[in-house]
Image (cartoon, rainbow, N blue to C red; front, side, top):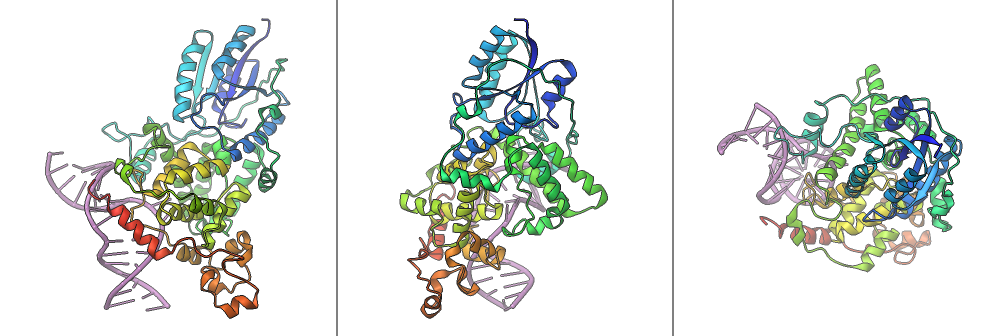
Length: 472
DNA sequence: CCTGGAGTTGTCCTA
DNA sequence: TTAGGACAACTCCAG
């Protein structure tokens, strides 16, 4: 009982820089203990396989940054805190807020309980604007992005500037769970390969940001649509895990904007705005992960076809750009945004499978799997969301491939079995004449599949299904 | 209350 | 070849 300290509880803020809770504690306490709890008790859905891997490496990185002082537990936070409180003198417990419905519920109860025993504080460490601050004049939440961002966010306060502190770590002697005991890492080949594409941790997020602001941003507006170009930041996993703060990115963009007034920067900022919008939707419509935001879609005639779903997951639909995307996802834990839309649209509007099946697969495979962004984006693609793509907007995977991967570099990288086809046939391998395919020993239906469905036909079927919902 | 403009990311047909 | 309009109608949002 002679040990005295304050606790910072790490959650989705796995960084030391611009961490509001850490800043606050450093100003008010001499001894700080940093804690992480792997909570598999409260979530309605467990972490996906990719997320677990990312978390494993993130905790290792964070622990090193903290001189091996990161205290780790597994289980229900209430139980864990209750034990700590009964064994040590805790001056204060503090954390940065999370916004997932299950976490809000958990933290609310927990806060009431903890407040009986110590002081508790929470901060905004992952959003530019709090979802409860950005409301229409009548007090209700926005459902359309443009007014949400332009009228709501931009007319509200400027996001606060990033701030760092000197951490006063307390060299505690409390027994921590070993990171390996959390069993987040995997021995599967998949896991070993997927991780090679990333450097996980706060310092690498900063490196990526700097590279992006030196080069990628310069043609961001156009280049971000081309999966083979290096114009996207690829910071989404780091943002999700809090290894970089949105405020750091926002103000980095503002700084650059002072030197050059550029629409690329404005568009990058608005992409951060989309992330805010998704969190706002999740906060105000907490059933977003499981229920159509537009109720009329509850009656939509989704099909159930395990065979189609399996081909989609494996990247064997016969449409090269879709298959390239699905394989990029499997091989790297990431998929380029443009291709996410194409692959998503294909699942929902050509295969007519429920968006929730796609949402769950992405949840399992993406390093940036995020409750808000993943759910809201799938609802957008499916047309079931508030501010969704209109139902007649069905991506044509052939046209999209030609338009956004004109030299098929992205396709060739992930679908190497068709790389020798002449560019003329690479977007439609089934149209390659026999003499041409023979000359390169390529056999359609053997080396690469025939299309799983026909585009024109499946498009019309979808339009018909969607129009059956009219005036419901 | 009423009014009117607008709505991330597309496709297809026609002139 | 290319640019423009239809697609279908609704809800959102602000004045």
